[in-house]
Amino acid sequence: MGMLSLPGFLSCGKKKDFSLSNEKDAHTSDSDENSDRGNWSNKADYLLSMVGYAVGLGNVWRFPYLTYQNGGGAFLIPYTLMLALAGLPLFFMECSLGQFASLGPISIWRILPLFQGVGVTMVIISTFVAIYYNVIVAYALYYLFASFQKVLPWSDCFSWADEFCSKTRLVNDCNATLGEEIIHANYSFIASNNLTCINDTINYKPVQFPSEQYWNKVALQRSSGLDETGNIVWYLALCLLLSWMIVGAALFKGIKSSGKVVYFTALFPYVILLILLVRGATLEGALDGIEYYIGKQSNITKLMEAEVWKDAATQIFYSLSVAWGGLVALSSYNKFHNNCYSDAIFVCVTNCLTSVFAGFAIFSVLGHMAFVLKRPVSEVVDSGFDLAFVAYPEALSKLPVSPLWSFLFFFMLLLLGLDSQFATIETLTTTIQDIYPKMMKKLRIPITLGVCVLLFFLGLICVTQAGIYWVNLIDHFCAGWGILFAAVLEIIGIVYIYGGNRFIADIEMMIGKKSCFFWMWWRMCWFFITPVLLVAILVWSLVTFSAPTYGSVPYPTWGTAVGWCMIIFCVIWIPIVAVVKILKAEGNIFQRIASCCRPTANWGPYLECHRGERYSHVVTPKKEKEHEIPTVSGFTYIRE
Image (cartoon, rainbow, N blue to C red; front, side, top):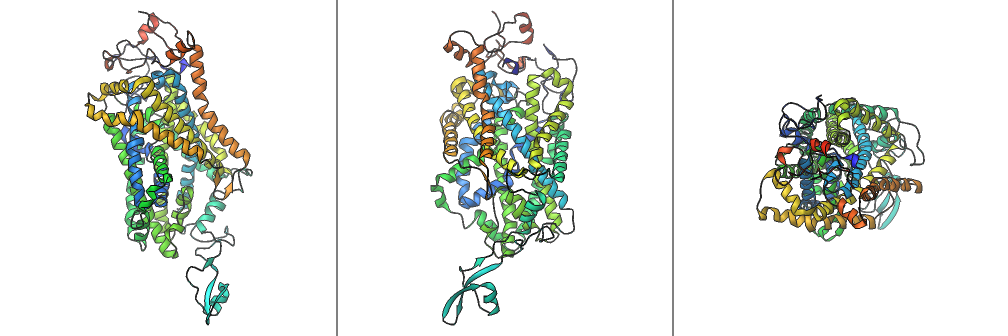
């Protein structure tokens, strides 16, 4: 597996002691500190890319749902604690790691060759996620185009609807007072005799909102289950193609082009959120929605339930995108002395505040919907896809000039999805660049476009009539335990094998010396609190595992088996790579393991001028040619 590393190290500035090629690609410029890999054009490009990566679709639909489900405003207490104890420590660690060595999520494991499979797992999971995540972007594109109509197509029960479609709740039967007796009768009898239903005795007919039937019958053309694949939904396939074309166009020059696109894709969603919040706050019933979200109905006793803390930890973990490989990849293009500590604080706080802010915009409009329908807010809100593509569109359809608000909402979803997708694909291309630097320098554009085309074809199964079941299945398995497992190994490997204090010394080479008091909190988290929390979340998730379902539709046994096969395929590389490293090593089994638990000879800062005395021994390419000696771990050492 030594082929996964990049041996080149450069000196600072334009003068290089080694060059992979005399050619320059669009990924680099003369002003770059690292003239081989390239750097961000400026700090803003990096920060906006990181914010765009962390702030995604989950901030709009998952966080608000979890908040009201877990005690309203009380949920912010465990959410904030989990940010400090688990999210931020891991975020800071990955940003520092990528910036220190200027390497992607696989090659960065020169720090600990035995664990290089962890980086492979991260990249494979990111690939799976990239496949289905762009399908959700395609959904947003479809609804965006559908909003360009005078009357929103999901605003009423049109020709595609069945007998269960209704804009309001329909009473089936209830109790009523007839003379001195209480009777139970159907609503037609109650109405014909001018009787009044007694509160809390009303039974409603099973009906579906127009937006729900539109989502299932028209947008998805949803089949009965995973067993019934059906045909490719052609308009969703075209939207998926368009979304991949946008991603390819934004990334064809790597960070030099994506760093400019995010000025729009990362910032404009905040403008739309603000517009939606102002509009929602002026609607009747908005206060009820906000109070339900984070007001009088906050239930502090919910904090006694372990499930609430587990939900807070998992939301922080997935929202910040730690252990996906993207943070390492994006940070690897920073200049060496960039203050990655302040960057981590800024991005994490921005991400969490965005989640809270989005909740106000969402629930103010849902409160109005509950007011119009004379229903409690809890009955118009659901999680995941239903919130984004059923409940909220239904609410927007009841507003004046509804196509405008619908356009703004789905345009916001589109932008949130795209900038997260940009970073995910950049993770994959960074990995390819580290493995095949010469090829990537010459063929960056065709390779980037090739990755997009390949993932488009792999995603076609997700735009069949059973596509939503595949999207849900991949999300349920690949975006779950594999990431948690990789994160646990990542922090254990760096802190307990490489050495936490040694890693802190590496960070101080970049951001300068810090006091013992400054590092006290990070040591507590890295050495004990964060790994314990991650293990607890992982064990809890496995213990409480239940077979996946989509709504009320269960998955067939073979579907669940496919899900397990996907997650096994993701994590199996951790032991495989470890075994390969050990087999390539020399000596007895203990010597082999020990040699694989030490950093390779070329581990350290990428540029020679940043190595100092601590890394003065690092192998340079010039020395490699003079004293090339293959080693047990697949890397090159220097014969003194």
